[in-house]
Length: 141
View (cartoon, rainbow, N blue to C red):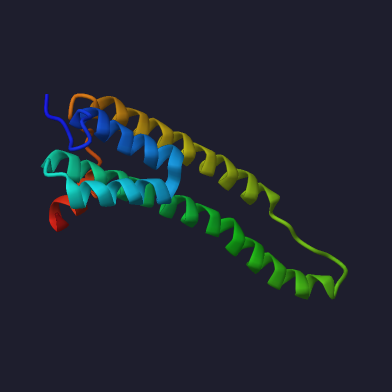
């Protein structure tokens, strides 16, 4: 069993990277990934560090896009409300907010499940295939 320079097994450190990404956020995973990329020599661990950062970034970007859609609908309805208020009426699409709230919660659940699977596989120095993220990592690393 290969060990890191800190004396921890590579698999456990890889799982810890995913845990840090899931629960610690960007500061924790950036510090840990920086350490791995600068100090460690194990290629699997380096890819794991980059994959943890990339996976967190992809889920954050997806959540951002999902959150923008109801905001865009609200802006459009406000523009129409300026016109309709002239006639004493207004419109509101609260169903849109509810739908995208459910979608946002589903993405959050999917994020938790993906990270849980990655943590589990990392203990044996394995991984699960995330096609978009793996393609980017293979292309640039």
